[in-house]
Amino acid sequence: MSSPAYYTEEGLKKLLDELNHMRTVERPHISQQIADARDKGDLSENAEYHAAKEEQGLLEARIAKLEEVVANARVIDTSQMDTSRVYIHTRVMVRHVDNGSQREFTIVAESEADVRTGKISVTSPIGKGLLGKARGEVAEVSTPSGTTRFEIIEINR
Image 1 (tube, rainbow, N blue to C red):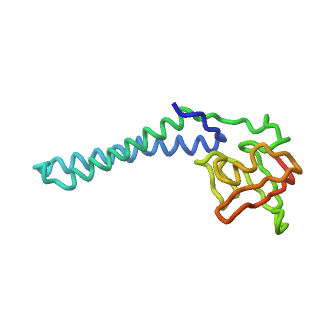
Image 2: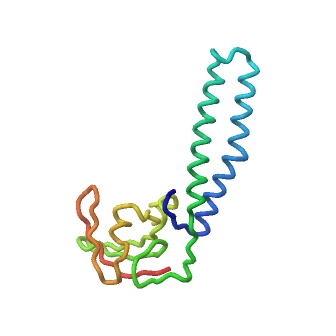
Image 3: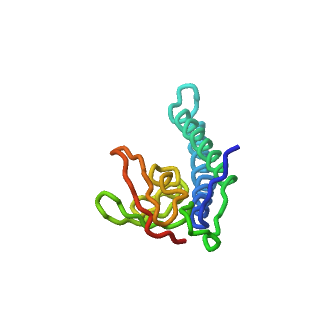
């Protein structure tokens, strides 16, 4: 059994929508492809049939994985969060110690991460480095380009 993953309501809804799409759109489409290929005769030499069966297997594996993620998903009520330290689903303003630039990140589950919007995964090097830090503390983060130091300036919901 997988450990729980924490999501916002929006993030969990996105996962449920994706799962529903796979079940109600993609699965019937592949079943129809298999039926069409089966109608063409000899299955031993039917490349369309074998390709559709392989695609079906991959889809079923993706559905099973997503069902497991959804089953272990926990929704966090951000209004009840402690903002004295950086936790998942907190927004944190940091200052790069070496060059003084500031950046805001929201720490989210891996499937909700979107670097362009400032949402970083709790399992990313920066996410791991910031977790548990309080305002004023400096987090040393090991990145591919070396160690980077971020000072925690502000923590919000």
